[in-house]
Image (cartoon, rainbow, N blue to C red; front, top):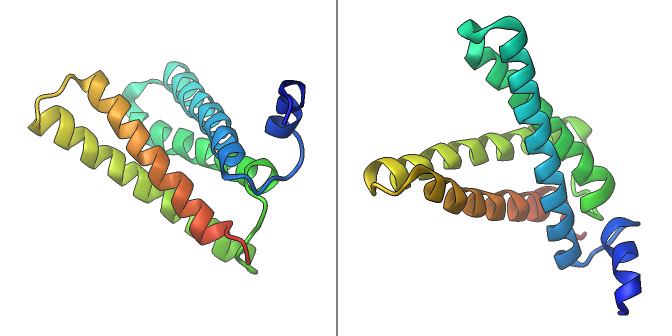
Length: 144
């Protein structure tokens, strides 16, 4: 592989190369985070903090949708499920498990272990990223 070929490999077409898929998943996750955080800020600033949990859920769902669309159209090559409904439900369940793991790790690292919350967030993000990527790759987008 030549250096000038790298952008094409990273950004264009389908790939089974797990390294490229991880890179694309990072881009996907970063984009989903921006959508999630942006929507949360927009809703909260527009409609008030009284419904922060509702805005958080809506923003989380929007970020999850972005990740799903990136996953099926750009990140992963294969789709394991024949049923779109089953695929979406499992995708959401993996996302909700990731959210649960985030809460658990933040509690463990920041609250119980006394780690600075930003260091705890970095470690948590890495762990949950690994969980989300491999759960989705091995359950939803595995090779046949």
